[in-house]
Amino acid sequence: MQTEHQEKVDRQVCANCGGTIKWNIAKQRLECSACRTPYIAETTVQRVEEHDFEGYVQREGQRVSFPDTVIIVCGTCGAQIAVDEHCTATVCPMCGSTQLLESRQEAGVPPDGVIPFRVDRETAQQNFAKWVKSRWFAPNRLKQAYQAGKLQGIYLPFWTFDAQVTSTYWGQGGNTHTVRDSKGNTRTEIHWRPVSGTVGGFYDDLQVCATMNSASQVVEKVLPYNTCDNTLPFSPSYLSGFLAEHYAIPATQAVDTAKEQVRTDQINQAESDILSRGFSHARVSNINIEYHKITYKHVLLPAWSSAFAYNGKQYMYIINGESGKVGGQRPYSVPKIVAAVAAAAAVITAAVILLTGAAAPPALQAEENAQPQAIVIQEDSPWTAWEDNL
Image 1 (cartoon, helix red, strand yellow):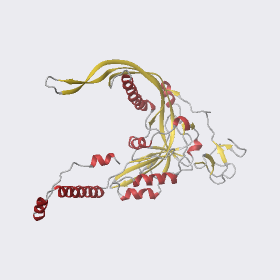
Image 2: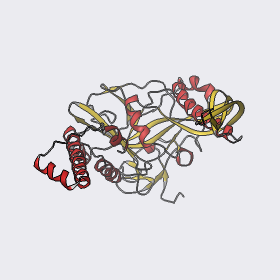
Image 3: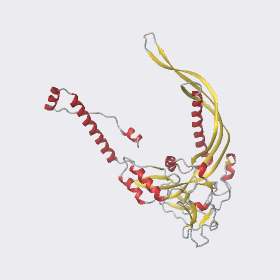
Image 4: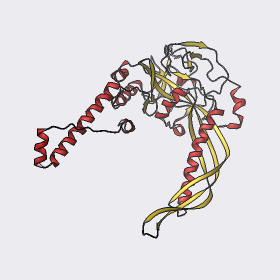
């Protein structure tokens, strides 16, 4: 609620003392970083708007995404970062490169909404520390990386899509039967019958990250964001003191990813529909999805990001600025893996020796004591099972 001391942000400069107006994460409000005078964001719309997807191409060519900001381009990964006059960037938050060059803005869809930061830098550091310590085979250098405190606050570009769909499917429903042959042997068979039907539904805010491919793989690990409830109408005021990435994937390309999400869910619904008809097995051989209407919006979502080098390669990690969830790339320490394998092999060997020794008759134990035998154990590689548990 606006108080008598709150004013609308005209520029990112406090009218009282000339300080910089920034988003206070702890108080969840805009205020002067010097005198703490509260402000409310100046927005062009009263609510976050959904746009008809059919008009996207025309809208993209009409305006620039971040007016009154400077765009810098990373010479290594190609990320385009919007920087205001109160925020400087010396390294790329996407890859850690220092090859940053200023560039001019090109046409693009401006943000419709934003989720302001809810997790501060200190909490993000603590969450990353816990995440690192839980990585069994992480090198010590990775475990020391979070102590450097080089997290950068950045707003990542996303497209969200709404869609109303109806799907017609064709498939089979099956039930298991026991069959006995002439010799009395039994076996189980699935008897399939053709089935068809219709399913559908409404999808609200399917989230597709519009950042560079290398970063999007990490971003997927920290989803989801609560864009349905926490997205506010966009204002440049929320970006003060933070970086913001220009989208690298247009909505015309991102919509295909959203449709894949819809397709996967519709197939699951079709299989459930088949099972509801009394079958114990279901499979869908073909599905035709009809989209009645698709709408979209461009939103900026908060993240703490950093990158570090290890053995000549760059690795990045991201902390969700709304929920605090951590995701990242990380190398494996070969010495730690070798030590773990050696320890596991030693334990298995000792266990086999104890078991075989306990089970052997006294005479055989005496013979083994007189002539020790080498025990050779051949084990399958444990890497896959261990990695699945990381």
